[in-house]
Structures are given as C-alpha cells and as structure tokens.
Image 1 (cartoon, rainbow, N blue to C red):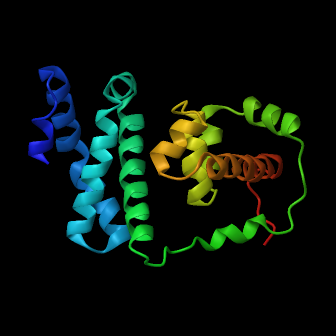
Image 2 (cartoon, rainbow, N blue to C red):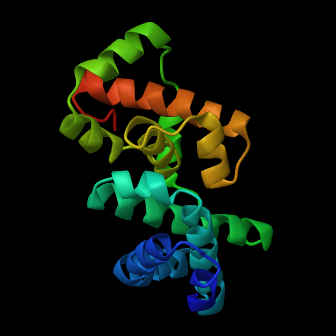
Length: 185
C-alpha cells in the first residue's frame, strides 16, 4: 500500500491519504476479510478501495470524520463483495430481503415528502433497519450526496441496478417511517 502513496504527487494529498490509511486501514481490512475470509484478497479489496478514494480526496476532506469512515468502510465492503462475485463464490444473501414481498405501493411524491419530513437522526435509525443493499445505496445518496452514476461507480454495479435499489429502498424506508419501525412479523 505504501508504494501506492508514492504515486500521489501532491505532498498534502499524499499525507492525507496516508492518514486515512493509518486511521481506517485496519478496520477496512476487517470489513473486507469478513466478506472474503482470505487475508490476501481482503488486502486487495482495501487497496482498490483506497485507489477509488484517492480520486475523491477533495470531497473526503470536506466530510466529517464519521462520514469519511462510513465512506471508506462501504468502499472496502463493496470492493470485497465484487471480488467475491467475480471469483464466482456465492455471495451471502440477507434474509431481510423477504420484506419486499407483498408490500403495497406508495406514490413517489408522498414517499419523498415523508422522507423529507424526518430528521437526520430518525432517517439514520430507519436506514439501519433496511437490508444492507438498500441501506448503503440510500446512505450514499442521502448523506454523501452521490448521484446514481457515482453510486454505480462506487458499488461497481450498473446505473439501472442503483436506480432499482434506490426505488426499492425508498419504498421500504417509507413503510418503516409510516409504521414507526414496527414489523409485520
């Protein structure tokens, strides 16, 4: 990883990137290892996450520490998941995807209004109740302000997939907000 930093010409950017690595590299490795169960592959995923983050250093500087950490952890997680997928291993599925079955439709306008009305803390709490695939996508959109193309690049999936995840995630989020987080089970 140290050799990667040598390619960053600007001294200030190199120091910032090194600081991010020292602060979060070990946790990112843990996230990637939890997905891949292989130390070498996890290191590759973390490296790829830092290569991606290096292209967004200006944006990362403007973010708060918790937002930086969340961004880097998500980058490591998604690089690891994509590495797993490319290796033709089975990606573990989240059993909470079953919540999609049998839900009623909500209009986008009413849903957007409902989401806008809740505060950041409530929104974060409700996002944490969603399946990870939707939670991550909505977090990147709502809190980091990434658009569909940026989220697609970040998660290494198509824009269509991102659009679908946003739509489904917002629908689930709206249902959680309407019910106050109560489950149907």
